[in-house]
Image (cartoon, rainbow, N blue to C red; front, side, top):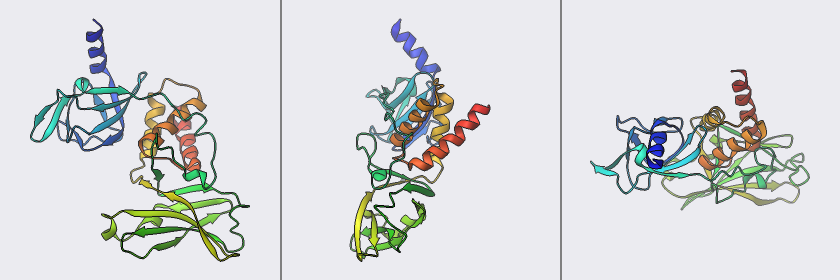
Length: 266
């Protein structure tokens, strides 16, 4: 009876995708990506046994889905009905207190490897800094150093506005021929007073080209049974951090507030 009940619930559940690792497609050939809506009766094609889907089920939480050992191999793909695949419920850890506070540089770039080792980089990203530690009023400035194997480092000066550092996605752009090599990005600070440059933080970027952070925040808000704004914000932050990388606190909070207000009006 319990097994039958679980199978029925899995089949009737609606899965909304927040992360895909690997190459996963519906049987129709449609690519599974962030925002894709799946149901338990759909057949999925996994490229390898290591492919993963992270998806939210309204009222039930977040699940990690991967092909089971019973998945059938067809044309070098693993094909399986979604409800029969491996389902592991994600731990309900909301990075307590996060999404509420605003960290300053360098802590703003510090990541928790247990969650995600990447820093989320959108089209533009804002980070607060302490002007006593980083005084840019005298001509000192932040810069991004880009180092590639066998190449001279590229130094990109970065913009500031008051106590806010602004980093654009384009600041990370480098020669496409280096894209296959390991590139290291370091945030540095040049002190005009001392004439010395120092490393401030390593950045391992995860680029958001498709407004995926906005999509995930909208998914979490629309599918959550939680009505409290603070906890809902923490859940959105945790899902964005886990799925995409650690976001800028300022940009996350501004995006969450805007989307939350839109949903409240509905």
